[in-house]
Image (cartoon, rainbow, N blue to C red; front, side, top):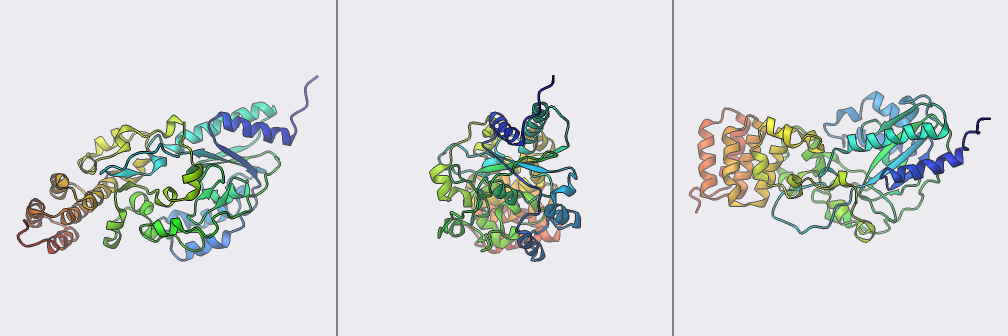
Length: 386
């Protein structure tokens, strides 16, 4: 005589415990019903706050964010998982920085593999086949809204999901399930209170009052998603961020009090990303870029994007030792984007050597936009620098 299948409640409890065994720190269940703040998202798009990320505004993307069942018609429950990416405390160095979540392996692959394994394990537990689909920042879902509704925390003033005992340094995963499972209670409380640390600390003032952010002013957007020139008015504010930005999370009181460094080896910093040297990243060929960043989230920015970012960081660090790398990039990089930002970096570092590189490049540069950057850099330097 065959045993009866587990009850929905027993299945939900088992599923969360299995998720914890696979390295996820939080797990909650919600329904595939429309998220409650679709109007905020729609207004954000209409205002153009998404910048060049046109894929967010397509009709299909809007529709599926309103109804996850368009991604999986059989979906009856939605499991939301969170993986901790809090880094170990470290001394500040005169080098570039990479956002904590991106210093190790590519989470798209790592977390998706774990979640798919969990899905297979769940099918064995219930003793039946059912439809399922996994997303890790790869599909048109309002992740933080779903996580809040699954009881994993509230959406903080810094726009991140915050858990009251773990902080906000998480990556989210969604598993759409063709199973009826009891949903968790939404996290209803807003525990940011009157705190404004994130707003006051944001270098570009990109965090908006409605708990969204203006991507067109965000350091993460410009160092990861944007393919063009970083606006001159924002370059100094990029500071030492080579890829991404953690400022609004670093200053969050919930992270300071409750954030615990992740023991997950997948998010341990690769040696080359623990304290990256901008001069080193300026000199990378496409082949070296591909080899060095195999299996890394940094590939998202592409070689020219990271070299562009490295030029800006070098300019902001103002180390004379970076001038040769900036000069070589200005003269020899195949990308006009990189050459233009290298000119800006040389103008920021200044000095006689930078002046010579800029003067030499002005006579050789074929691109008008790059020459304008060289002219602007020279205009900010003394005619005969010391």
